Length: 186
Image (cartoon, rainbow, N blue to C red; front, side, top):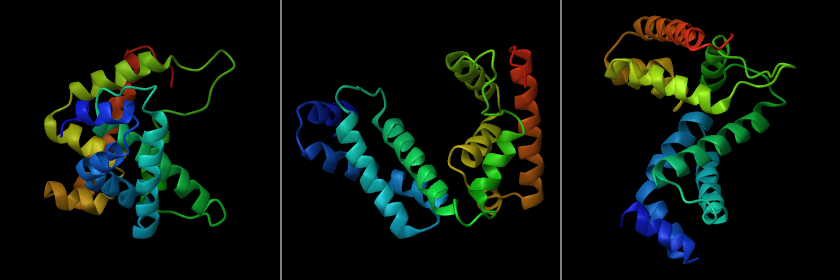
């Protein structure tokens, strides 16, 4: 069943939509949640919550890509669960480390003059990603979207961990330069 058929089931309020979405993208969402939470039970709960959110969001929303829509929901739920889990026990971890690395490039703080125009920022980020070599784009996305550990990236890309760290540092530096060139004051 393709995405449009599954979305049509959501719009018809047919409970088969959840089963179809879970069958098609359950593994994908589980991998995202597992990378972030590193706890199988918490990841399963997060994925189950994803299907509830999809049910609540479609309609009125009509996503262009059900995979991306469900993946984004899963990622946001997993990050929220991680924040709740680590609120009392502060510590390291791959997710915190990856997000801290990006914080060095872009701060989430709003200024009194106003927040950055989200659409312009997304366009600049997409332009940056489009200009990268395929391996660099995959490396960047695996680290900062899927939140893979440096060791997992080293295995995936057949690199030494120090080479991964160096490549990520260069990509962040390149991103900072690209954003400045696009007029973002960092």
